[in-house]
Image (cartoon, rainbow, N blue to C red; front, side):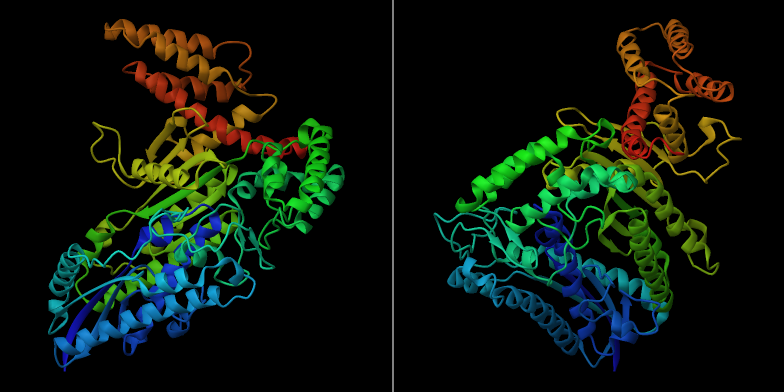
Length: 612
């Protein structure tokens, strides 16, 4: 028998992950693609020993590949197989494709056979879409004789697979005219029977007028009673956490929420915060009209009365108890130069160990996100996509980066030990009621920024942390630097601190009642930057800018203690050299810190300003 490297690619990634209107759609699309990939990987003969990527350091790797396990598999699979010839390898690839399609079919049938959902589905359209090809499957293979050929064989298989994917398969269009398209991506026709709302005992909810194709129904309704908190719940989590010790005034509001749950216009996801086990949209009076609109005709008047009482209950809350604006953080992390690192790996065994390390990071990353009160959409290999409360996003990013870097230090015999992988993390902060796809796109922009330094800073690419903020109706603000090792914040100058530590310092300065910086400070810096924008005399510009900024810093309403004020003065002096742009960058850094401080303040106010 001969040895072959078999490489498989499963998709489409965009169809299964990106197209989403709810966090549940987004999470389940990622989960679905992983489950399909696991089925394909498990079908490979002797998969526990033959798989190279994915791989796991678990003693029972085969258990990881079973349906429903927490093990995530990316959409690319690499395996070493034994076969007499290429035709036998082709047969192995064919069986992997059949396994992938069978797993997809299990999810499709689960939804269609659910008696609570059947009344909402047009059976003929459903069966027609089921017959169309949903799973994209590509394969390529290359023979190799021994481990010394492994690197070349892997590179050749990757080139062949890329060429095969460029020759996409196109099927005859089977759609219908004058039929609403899917609300998620507009690609396929809706398979909805009528416009009635679907709301079952497991919390599956499809609103009136929401058109979903077969893929959309599967993303919304498959997977049993697995629920996923809304972006509003995540955005308001700092406030909810702070409220735990001060819940007496909330009793009336909670009772009204229970009534809305009973009328099927408000959900109570099982994974929501125990203290507030409802969709947190109930805390946003501006959205109460949606509850009335979603109610059945016989219950509209009752829901209108309940939401009126809720508005009154919200008005009666103490100022400190009123919910914060629902801004949340979306975190996207990605390993740097992973392809380049893999290209240095010279044998299959080291590649397996590399895959195991990536799998270990993925599992640990999920725990890190959950410890920081966030929700993972996807953790697989070197990729992480998660929603987080604003106050926990930066600590979570630091933990993820440290975990990723430290894993490669556990062994000193890696072939890539002189250029070990790093992790770039992008954090975007946006309004929870923004379109979900826009929030994701914004987060990906932050991740790209984390990987790319500013012009003229060669050598500073990748290994970065970027934080972007976009308030509704405004352009984005951002700050970006490469990671630095964690330092003693009391002994280092602000310029020597890592960006996450410096942001923590600024946040503390903004939210403290004493020894603080006033909120108008960054606005005044920004106005100063505008004033000096068109100045041409560089020497005069530098002196004037420095004088103006230090004048602002020296005002009486900046009540920092002496040591902190000196540190800020030193940092400002070093940061504003060059042009008006340098003042704007400093102002942007402070603006971003203010946004993060808002989430801390929401928690501190209801807790009577405890320690930061």
